[in-house]
Image 1 (spheres, rainbow, N blue to C red):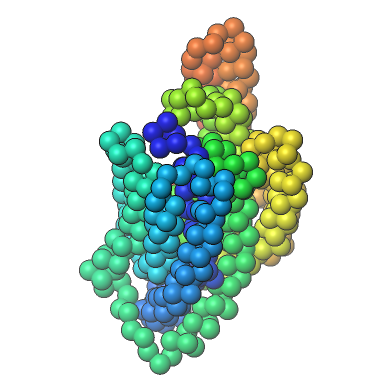
Image 2: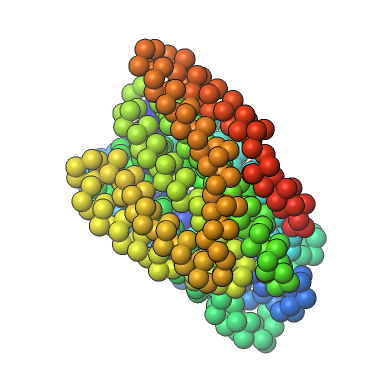
Length: 470
């Protein structure tokens, strides 16, 4: 793609698109509140779900009207700067600003996406997102082949962002999921939602800024070309993180109901889900380490700093493995009515990331950005585990025995063995023999451990979790 549209031009779009995505957090977490209250409505609490969707739509509509012109002004100031003008052709800057501004309309669609999830129709929401992702991949490939212009790529990505919300609107209306009615009690309902959602907003926006500002910071500190390079590694990291989200989010509505009915069962399911998520994250990190260089070369070609991008990807995925240890707890905290549980730790992560970016980027370039994101997790993850134990009242021993140790046994040790084999074989072969050998070792070792130690891996808890009603 970089060869088709230019890494500099794409880097400009990455900066605009990243800031537009962060601007969508101006809903103050109302989408999370809709899911929470709608799910509890299904459990017999909080009344009709329609009033929460209607109030959320009112809030997001006002937020969209306020944020669009502010974003457009700021984006226009960015694209007329000297460094940006040097990598864009005539007319591309205003077009990119317009498309990034249009992408913010997704903010107005978010209540309908939340309504699908809260009403137990998460598979529909996931299908919508899968369609959008497929459109983005195929559309980007098509325009790079036939219309190699940055504005065409930006148009595809803008449509992909708007598509899930647009489909959600149609599905909500067709299935009568929630009737939109702006009643006289809308402001009272909105106050009730904001009392919950502002806590979720503080936690989510701190984490989102920390996670998503990397490509924009690469463009600001290192130049548009490096925004593209860092974005390439970050896209793979984001895809891996999305897989974890797909594992976690189907249980959000069920957990909201379980915490209202049976906390013991909810905590047991949280531990089991944590083990699954950690195992998948560890496996993905190991495979990323093994296949990072071939993946970057296949995707971006040989005209980019392949080894540097691969190193960034390896650091990001290693951080994700550590981060995965508490991700299900964050969802469970929302479901338990404690959305602000990890606000302080996320704020510490944000501030420490900012300090480390300032210290490391000048010395290590875009690898410094990846290190600044991942290194603080050594402190943040234990902070979050201790906080969750105190707030949700579970034992660390039970958490370790049911959530961590099964993942370490089933995947952790085999992953380490696979990476060691990969590194050893790669010393003697420059081809893909080391990649295949490392992957095969990890898979065989993992299957062997699961078969031998299945009695200690709480397989029955996994089966019970999968059978739970979403």
